[in-house]
Image (cartoon, rainbow, N blue to C red):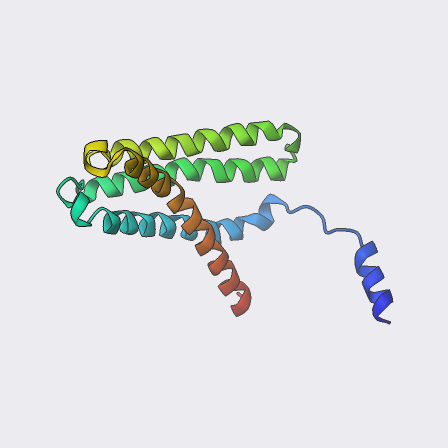
Length: 162
């Protein structure tokens, strides 16, 4: 009995590809809140790291952290829907465009962090390698937090049955 159930699962046809109507609630209830919350948490973590004594005298104001957060949200917010639309449209033949888009987004997010927080990441204050590593960490912080929060929100919604 178990073997036939396994065989039926293996031989079953895959479900049809998701349509744009099916993904709308996922974007509204999971992706957007996760991205916004990830940007806010990333700004708080950046502020906390740059509040250490080494950086405190050169730490930019709160307005700079908000500006960098909005820039990062905009930069990463352009990539994710673009990749999603490409997936829905079935434009998988040009995967090299996705790689190029991802590299451009990472470069733009790096520049937003590096330029926005330049006074604290200056090689004379942070050191050459430490400033670069902090800028790299700050670049990946927002998307990693957003994906983790998105998974958490999705799990919570699925668990509650909403």
